[in-house]
Length: 216
Image (cartoon, rainbow, N blue to C red; front, side, top):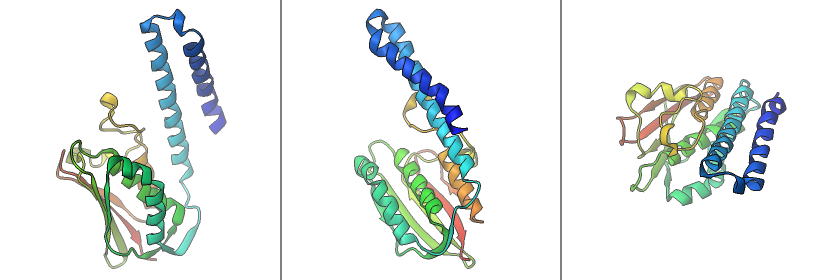
């Protein structure tokens, strides 16, 4: 299925590239602009298909381990995001030692990675990005949070951000992405019998993403 979905787009991108390289001098500025639009649209559709396939694959938890060291998970995630963190000058704060939990290590790594990446992406211009991770013991569950000082989200959109391919800042092209990341995060958390939600006082006031994981 993956091959069947992607192959027509590969062909379209290949022929568009050929036209741009071999026939650019025969086209006017408007024609070259149209080719560029086709190329960018094909690339975006490829990313949409990849995210849709990824979403379909997370219907089941891969392998649950009884005592996953979340400190190790966060160290791995931080290393993988090092370039983005440094590029944006992010001050990443991890509060205290995180607990051991029963979970799918790979999937929970994706949760933290997506939430941190989301906070990096939606940082405010002219403000040093600060991202804070922490947790609290709520009895039968651990409650984790990823807090940022970014652009924030109006309350009316708090549920919408978890819907697949829903992007609040799609216009203008300032923020890249397909709008699948938080949907994937939500599905992973719920597959672990947890829940996820967002708190934000509105635009320009940062956001806090909370999610829970059962202790057993």
